[in-house]
Image (tube, rainbow, N blue to C red; front, side, top):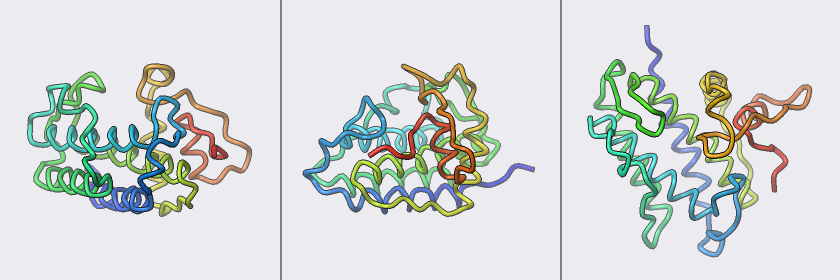
Length: 192
């Protein structure tokens, strides 16, 4: 039986949107824990990812162009909210065993797995945004638990320069689960 992570994915979107709602226009040029992105670039990336996952759920995800950075317009929060709603609706209308094209990951995957990838993206990018603007990041335990399970499946070959994730960092002894999630995906929980 496939676990339906769509409700958790929507909760992850709310976590992400709660961080984005606190972004002031003068913060968009700030660096993020993702060394190649300013805050503006990170927000564009997530809008693009949302649109790409939505296209994949509609059977239109095989074109790499649909995954590229989205337009934030004059209101980054509105763009983030609209793209989060778009992907939530698309996932809701898709069977979990549907075969989705995810060209950035190099192939086709069951929708249930695609939802889990998107969930991890949102949870971790919520931290990226929160860290960039200096606000707390408090994901619910079930979001962290689900994200840890998925992140643990990312092969080492998919981590490092030019890959979807940075190389895993060592987690301190006794690290909280949310800090283990961050280090597993190459982020330093003390980044500021």
